[in-house]
Amino acid sequence: MSGRLIICPTPIGNLEDVTLRVLAALRDADVVACEDTRRTRILLDRYGVRGRLVSYHEHNESQRARELVSLMRSGSVVALVSDAGTPLVSDPGFVLVQACVAAGLEVEVLPGPSAAVSALVASALPADRWRFAGFLPRRRGDLEGVFRSSETVVAFESPRRVAASLAVLAALDPDRPVAVVRELTKVHEEVVRGSAASLAERFAAAAPRGEVAVVIGGAPGDGGAVDSGPAVEAVRRLVEAGARPRAAASVVSELTGVAANALYRALTS
Image 1 (tube, helix red, strand yellow):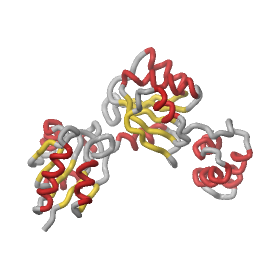
Image 2 (cartoon, rainbow, N blue to C red):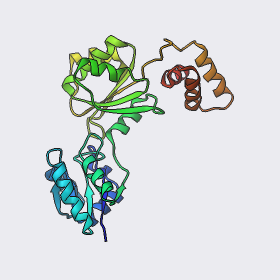
Image 3 (cartoon, rainbow, N blue to C red):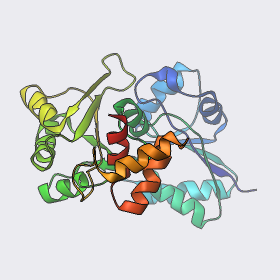
Image 4 (tube, rainbow, N blue to C red):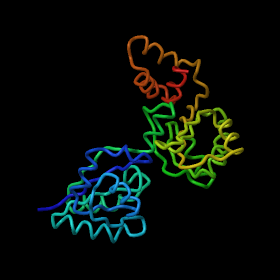
C-alpha cells in the first residue's frame, strides 16, 4: 500500500502556534523531512514528539525527493516541514510535491502559520486581491516592476535593504501606502504603517531588526487619482444599494479598468 506526503506548517516564531493536527501528523509520520534537523528537533522536543528526521533543503532537494518518493511507494508516511511557516512558500518543497504528484502519491496539506498571510492581515491594506512576491528583487528595474502591480503585494526583505527598496517605491509613488511588519508572533513584533516616502526616511535613519515582511498597496489605475471620479461614485452607489464594498469595487474595476484596490481605498479612506 502506498504511503503519502503531509505538508506540515510550523510556527513562525511562537512555538505555541503549532496546531494539534500538525503535532499528530509529526507523531505518526515514519519520516519527518526538514530544512534544519536541529531547529525542527527543538519543536519536537517541546511537545515530546519522537521522530526520524532527515534533511531536506535547497541543496539536496532533487536527490532527497527521489529517496522520499521511494519510501512513500513502500508505504511510508512522510511529513514535510520547513524551519518556519508553510513549506513551498519561499521554502523548499516544490520538487518533492511535484515528484509525489508525478508518482501518483497522495499529498495532504494541513493549515497553519504563514508569515505572508499574517503580514497581509496586519497591514490593514486591501486583501481582496493580492500577490506574494517572495523576496524582493535587487535590480532596480525588476523592483519597479513589482511595485507597479495593481494588487496589494506581500514580500520578504532583508532588514538591511528595506530603506533602499522603499526609496525606489517612493521615487515612483511617494504616497503609496506601505506596512513594514517585523518579528511576527515574537516578543518584539511590530507593524509600522505609512507612506512609502515616510517609511523610506524612517528606516534609512534606523534599519529594522529581525525578520521583515513588506506589504505594499496596489498601484493606482492609469486614470490617476480616483477619489472623486465617476468610478468611485459608482462603487458608492452599489454599496448604498446593499453591495459589499470589495465586491462593488471589483465589479466597477472590471467595467472601468480602474484598479479595484484604488477604488476600495478611495471608498474607505
